[in-house]
Image (cartoon, rainbow, N blue to C red; front, side):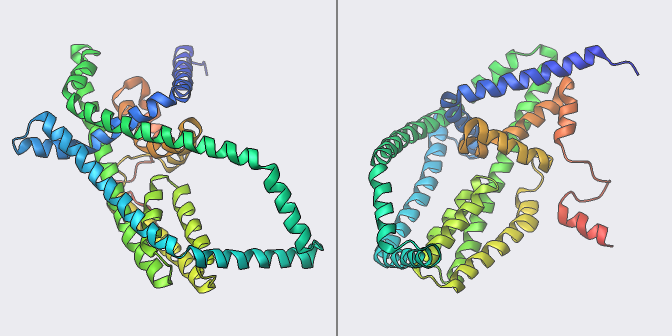
Amino acid sequence: MPVNVTYLNQTLRILLLFILVFGALYFASAVLIPLTFGAVLSMLLLPLCHWLQGKGMGNGFASVLSVLALLVVIGGIITLLQYQLSDLTDDLSKIEERVGSLVAGVKDYVNQHFGISHREQTKIIKEQQSGGMGKVAGMVTTLAGSLVGIIIDAVLVVVYTFLFMFYRVHFKKFILRLFKPDNRKDAETVLTSAGVVTQNYLGGLGLMIVMLWVMYGIGFTIAGVNNALFFAVLCGILELVPFAGNITGTSITVLMALAQSGDTRVVAGVLITYGLVQFIQTYVLEPLVVGDRLNINPLFTILIIVVGEAVWGIPGMILAVPLLGIFKIVCDHCEPLNDYAFLIAPPKEKKGEQGNFITRLFKRAK
């Protein structure tokens, strides 16, 4: 069967374009990360801005109030975490004693099984600490620089979010001017669909995180974790980082439970809570609250998160899924990219069949 050289060349050019785009994203990350966060957050806040304008407010005032509402929500979460963290610091002496007993137990184990006395272990630790003072100083300097960078990026994100909302009509007109008059209607459809999909996904994700706060809070309280609300909020927020976030939050909770009390029943309660919440999240909350709003194959969801981490780190993991959803919408409406939209999308179900996993599971069980 003869090979269609023209089609092959077109596919290779598209793949080369993808590689160049990811290269540009990597090297321009310092500029593009806060800009992308601003664009995504502006899409999320658009319904609130439109509602305020419907109440008779001007575009500028509505945009400012929308951004302020976002800052109030973020500030409230930070204040709650600080309040809980202050309670956590009151238990530092107990935690220090517990950690000391755990370290002593480890030293006894090393002494019994490896024949290294407590004095020799202490000497080795001191040598390591003295040799690593330069590294510690370097880490402190790097951390300070990172904090300054985070603050600057946070300010930029707020400014970008406001500007994207305030000048959204102007930007939309500019994008439409890039297309021929015959194609502008399709381009406007793509822009509208991208905004709606992003709003639905992020709104559903936010609602799911609030539900996770409630479930983790109840579970950790029943398990007997001190400052359960702090760890519940922490685990919920870390859900913004797909896959790795929930494991990280639960690991921190387990370690702190061990440091606070050392009671294995508390640790078991934390693990049981994690298992139950993950089951409810996967088979109830995600299908009902988030659903298949992005309509993306799970394989490519995982793949884009890995690529996002490699290109932009943790911000890339947070932004990867909604950006892939926007890219799929573009592929759906751009004929040369239709094949990629088909590849990214999950397999189509039969007419009348629900798309979530648990429904299909019960259908197969009949």
